[in-house]
Length: 339
Image 1: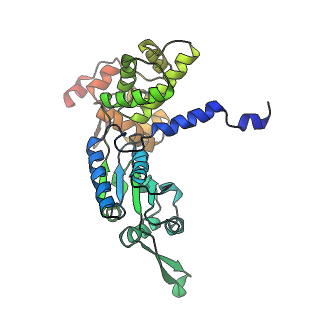
Image 2 (image 1 turned 90 degrees about the vertical axis):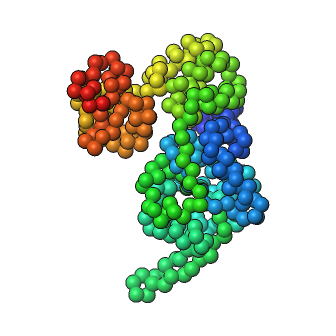
Image 3 (image 1 turned 180 degrees about the vertical axis):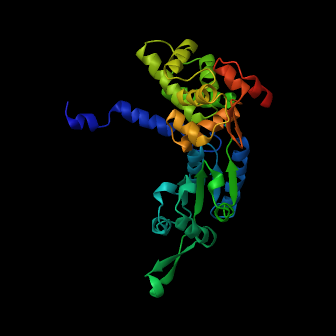
């Protein structure tokens, strides 16, 4: 086998890429969940079509994996508009943003993922671009510097953020519509999994899909990922994808019956076993489990707080009575009284 044979796409890899693309709905009617947001977006897009104009700028806020990128694609697809995709970390200078904005065609949709991570100079340039479709380019330095206005084609900005509180108010106020995406209910995730299983050509029962949906942390991205791991397990072990196969596969990948993974349990165990249930500061907790504080705060904590396993107090993070019970420990009387 040559290097070219290794690098050349195979029919199997092409099928997997096609599956990834097919997972994303192309219309609001196909999109599962987020019913209120879907109705709001439908009204916004239909009004823009009737008035023959670009839709207002849209901000999509919510935890990772809930469909922000998919909704941005739908905004472009349903309006028959081109889509340009970039991310906040990729825009580190005002010139980076100016290059993107100046190349947009009329009516194009610009999607900026993790928009709160853009450079501050780029944010300030974006204010004028969003309101007046114009940017000012500075030429030269010092006393001889000159500002040259550059007109932009009308466009729709779709920004996505997992940390809406980090967006400056002047930027947030310039979005005509802000959508807050919520975690999914198990019944909604079940619908997502039924569609994904059909695309995977995987025969799996409703009870097995229900087991996956209950362990998916209310997140479609996680549900689809777990379904593929179950598919792999059933394929390798030559078994049907029944409920017992689901449990065996998820146990192998350290996903327990409540959807907690290795890092979730490590955080809870650190608070309960090393710090007597808390309170413990975020930086101390991150150091104790060997993870970045931002990872703990943005990835782990939202699910643990929503599940009633963790409490955030002014003094630090505290494990709830439910967390003690989940780990098989008896809560300390003082903590039980406080909580």
